[in-house]
Image (cartoon, rainbow, N blue to C red; front, side, top):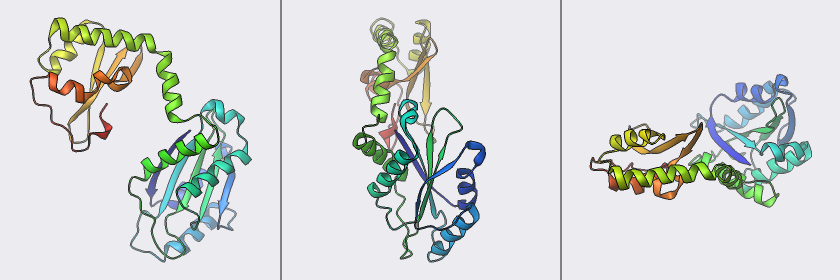
Length: 251
């Protein structure tokens, strides 16, 4: 199961999207709310949000996505349990919340909207809320015996084990026999070996890694092998490749 989250300011339009009947939506969780439509729910959110006018992005939007396989087994009661566990894990007990399941695609998923302002007028801190949602989803998946992000990733990488080994072989051959001096040399020489190497940069235009493409399979360097992560590759090139301030996202 994957969890995503962010703070938003467009509460009404988001709840309308969650309630969208074109997506075969159904309410699977409701907390501290009485309204029966998006406008009424939004108005209830606003009453509490008026206690804290400093906070602009005063609603949290979360998406909880079980795997397709798990989703086929989960009914609305199960989804209610998942949302309830998520609420407890992130300590949103004293916040208004509503969640909808969307069944319009084969990938069943839940949209959860939580009032960031509690009944005392305090804003829930949004530091790293996306990462915290991801970790909470991971813990809940383990608790409820659903597949975690790591399990899905490991299964996917196992299916392309031969391709990963092939890319790693060519990578090692490249440095041993072709001795690239710069990252551009490396990209060009790997291309001669039938591997498309794609540099990945952050918003500051700093190189944070490479992706490797072969036979329509596209993988991060660290997914191929840890020796292909940017921290392992950086010392091999003569040109200066600056270390990003936050290298947690390095590939």
